[in-house]
Length: 95
Image (cartoon, rainbow, N blue to C red; front, side):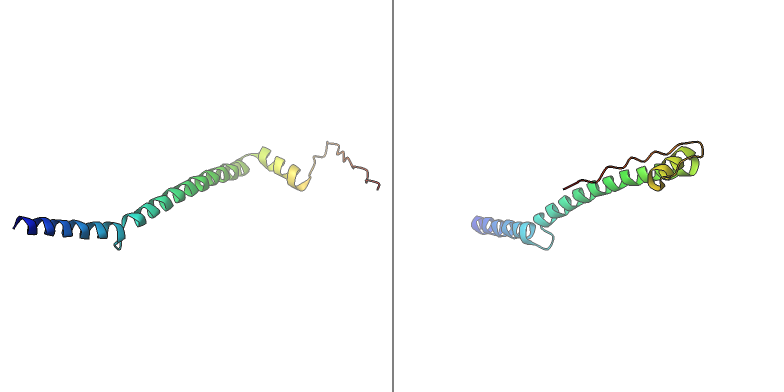
């Protein structure tokens, strides 16, 4: 009787181990999902930081004239009426 009980428990243990390692939702799948979750968390954190920076820039553009002026100067090349514009041109290279 004791041998049958031990054999049954060993078979039961082996079956549970099989389900744990090779079943539908096994340990390797859980490890892979946890790795994907960590990767997604880091991506989300980077995107959240980028969104915060963009939100701050939008607020600055809505409220402040300095950011608007800076953007007009750098991207559009605009100058004020009382300023003098100097453009430095490099001489072409002679071969």
